[in-house]
Image (cartoon, rainbow, N blue to C red; front, top):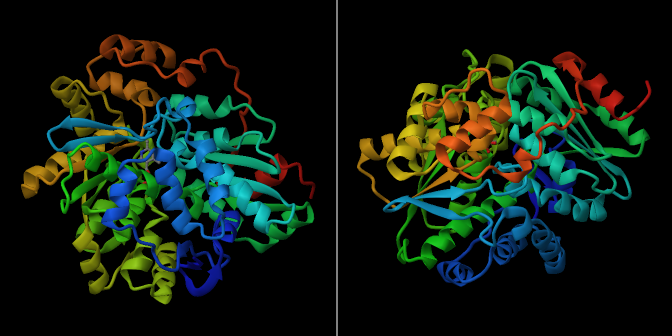
Length: 499
Ligand SMILES: *Cc1c(COP(=O)(O)O)cnc(C)c1O
């Protein structure tokens, strides 16, 4: 299996190269040259297997330059019950008849990013061993909150690796910020930037593709890579949990042979829902893919109109990890829907960069709408959904998951579609204690983050995750703030590279 670039289909690299370099030099993203398949019989066999075995089966089809032993070493180190709370790793919770919540936040940082970032360092180590000939890997991350912490935790003290994380100063929850600025490890650094997530992501992308920066790092024996979902090594582990959810539904008899299920994903950078699309293309019996946005509804509108327009106000919402106007991974979907037309993708991305808007051709719009539905909700609706879901089903969800639940309920009411459904749940509610507590009618005035955690516990009885409780009283290590324009200098400084 080789990988090509969405902006130059003649590029051909191995998965190890795609994972170590992160992004193609032409600015495009790496995609598999063809999607492997999983037959109904193979899925039935996997239904009887563990999460690690399911991951082995999926990864071995994509990472064909890895040996079976290498893949199993990665999956079995990453997906342990010690780190994810149980053997299920990504358990399904039935909300009501036919509607399931796929809980992706049982990992060490309490967000779904752990599903990929617990294994990415292992994939990176094996990949670097094959391609990086002894160079030190510098992982550069832009985060809307959850990726940063999950990447820091995954890569901390990993050999021959350093990790630098940039987050929007005002754009993350207090708990997310605490998680990052107290990070332990000798090879880590964290820096706030004045700007929003899109600024951070654009800055990181520019640094990545700047030959002058690459040359300067090369002189120090260093090589950039990415732990953002632009890296193929982030996406492939996400395909696994959709396969696994399908297996669990089959195993419990909730999905009968020949039946399909819909998938709902609270979406920001389009990585998680793209993984579901890839799972479907491989043969997992997925019906509609429902893309849920918050008030930054650029994707919901795109699904409806075929026009992607980022020229709009940016809102800081109660679901900050979805406060994104430029969804990087949409580029991969466009490439696929447009029949791998690299020139078209390159043009659309150029239009987005230059003018902030593009319109896809009618055939692409048609292909998009054949697979996807979109919806969105505002903060008040998010809060109502948290309350209603708790009052009605006794189930506590976080602000991001609530966006998914709300959009699903509207979709169902509007279409009458009662196909079995899996809603991706992307974070533990305690990461967003203030918003969740307020949604339930609890008071948060005057208390600090841990006061709010206790209030939420008092209201719901939901267990407080140990890694979050352990942050109490921990001293911050990283207080640096930089401008969007000075990110390059911050990188040099954090890496101790002199002029
Ligand atoms: C990252 C994140 C999302 C968005 O996921 P994408 O793959 O970027 O679409 C949603 N919810 C939470 C809690 C997240 O951390």
